[in-house]
Length: 148
Image 1 (spheres, helix red, strand yellow):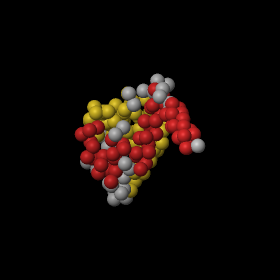
Image 2: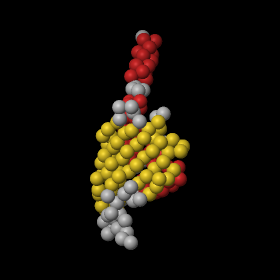
Image 3: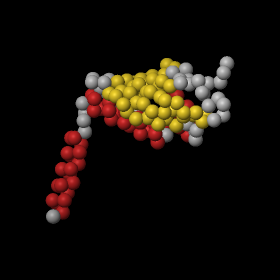
Image 4: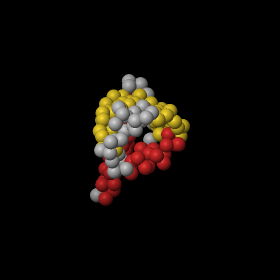
């Protein structure tokens, strides 16, 4: 009986591993889901682990970049730790070749007027070999930028 239970558990584990979609679209979908989960949980470590070593980042709302993501690692840590910062997103599209994925949601942070401001946001990812090689964030950064 004990051997039967072990065989059933092993078979279930093998089936679970085989059932993962390893197609380019499946991989890109998984990466987008993991990015959304990391952002929603404010887990900088999980977020940064999704990027290739030479990944590029552009934040069109705050006019940051393009810059190598690894240079921003400490800023990601501090942003995710900020109680006013939130990036609540969910995957919305994966290209047929699995190269691009988009996520939509809301970006929140302390505005220049001293109140927390929330704006719609769109994230565009480029994915290669299961890693993000480029992230571009689009949102209205005006509430966060200090007038010049």
